[in-house]
Amino acid sequence: MVRGEYAARYQVLDRPISAEVAFRFEGTAGGAGSFEWRSDDGSHGMVDLRMLTAESLQVNWRVNRFGTRLGLGAGKAVLTRKIDRNDPASR
Image 1 (tube, rainbow, N blue to C red):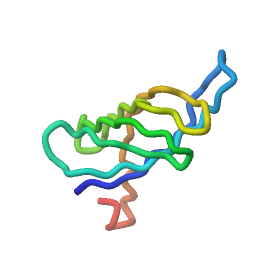
Image 2 (tube, one colour):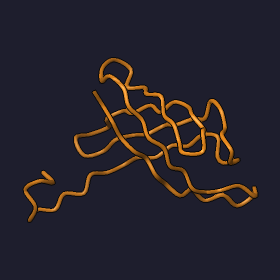
Image 3 (cartoon, rainbow, N blue to C red):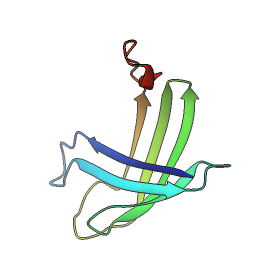
Image 4 (cartoon, one colour):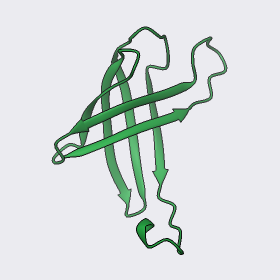
């Protein structure tokens, strides 16, 4: 089982919409790495997770249905694990 939360702030210059993105996802790990997500305003969609290296993860998300807020319809990010050499839990 995979559970997670994603939050980001994208740069939006040409549209009067929120640049903030936040949602939760959960699903069975295996195969495609695609999971349904939901946000507090009722929006929902899909998020695709793909490991690039042992320290980096690519996240591609898209909205299937908007909730009460108009926002971005899709996004992409590469997340990099920050390792604190003094904290054994981060290794």
